Image (tube, rainbow, N blue to C red; front, top):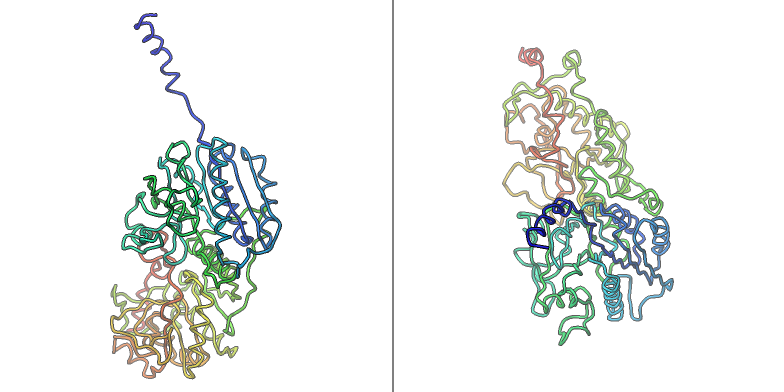
Length: 559
């Protein structure tokens, strides 16, 4: 056949060749589990939810030395998905005994490290022997909430790559620095990556807990979790450090990618910690997701293995949550938050400013001198509804004789470890005989320092502040707020409070309230923040988005 004939054949069949499609690469997912009953329902549900063909995935699971129901959960899940994946290989040791010398669930002895290194290396070799294109090594306290994570990692075309994961605080699944003896080193470059000041895939000395290895690359053959396989190894007896150094010694870069939001990881326990701390870390992650309007996914099969705490009102006589009936989405989210936190809360139907008619407004009296400090306008109907909602709560506090209450709005984000922090703050508050109000969340409006309460670690004197996101209120404080008769000289509630504790900068406004002796404190640091700030995507304000008081009402007040 002459060249021109070959060319013609290629020309004829080229369109067919160009239209060929290829299957996705094969991936082995390796999982090690020990005492993870509380995280497994969420971990497995989100793993199963990955948007990747299950027929191109194999699962490799090992679990031993459990004192909880981890193996029962794994068996249940495996039985439900075993036909979906290409293969599923598991091995369980029912022996619940600890390692020799182990003190507590979070204690890592050399023997435990050796066992972990051996298991991880076994998974790596199993993937190689079974011709997997990739291995995804993932821990059971990682929640890949982004279903496209695996597809994304493969697309980066790296030998070693990890998705950046979030937790509370500054913990994540990568290091940006390593000391000369191979331990963690915090660097100035770490936080900008974590906070996504710039987005990319960064070369770092350590990635862990969720790592994708491209086994098609010949250099991956040098990767290992066992120190005895590394010539002249001089590092610590630690699986993730051994793996990182095996990469470094063979000039293989490790990459962490922050180009999307991929998921979460719990903070590792300290040696003296018990399981309750792990539950708190999980709760903080679930709350963070709820704060964004979502929830940590768990499928119906495993939902029965999830637990919620028993509800109480902490040290308060009652907890109120103010919510507009036409905001069922906020009510639902807040109730989910209360379920996770174990808070028993009374929902109060807010007064809807949109429903206030002129006849009702005639029953109120407005401060003649009031103009919004920023927009130079009278009050809006939403601001009136907000004030009345809080006012009715104060009335109920006095009617029922509640000595201390917590008042919450429905657009708040809870700080991590919220309940324990509330206990710390209120233990200090309750030592103060004459307290009236404690801000848990606010917008501080003055630069001047706010003095610390003598002998306190978490309390300052409150200065001029906006917002009524959440505050603790004593019976005495509620009485003061009512006795000042604010409905006869009405201003927005977050202007009213600073007037009554005599920290408002407008002297003429304070003149309408000659008795300004409310004792107002603030938690420091704060325990509550808005879910959204002005201008952010998703921000909605039922006060700012309402209309201004009708001119007829304002004119009447001027007479």
